[in-house]
Length: 115
Image (cartoon, rainbow, N blue to C red; front, side, top):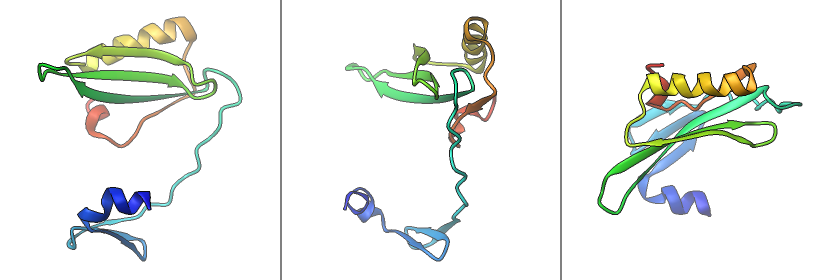
């Protein structure tokens, strides 16, 4: 019921391996790979951005870097603009403290396209 409530008005239909949005635009479904579960800290990190706005309307972003094993927040960088150079500095700082992970997991959003 939750899926229908959230997306019922946008006419999303899933049938035979294709997602049809608004009756015309179609996107083929992909086979999802199961997420690997790390067996110790510092094997896999996850990175993502969050966005919100202040009372005066200014928007800010938060870069979150999480260790997938113990769900420890390795970094939360907050600013109105986070450049790729700043992202690299944050990752360098974490790797100096924690060491390098075997893998970094990100979503398919546009945020990491230029890094």
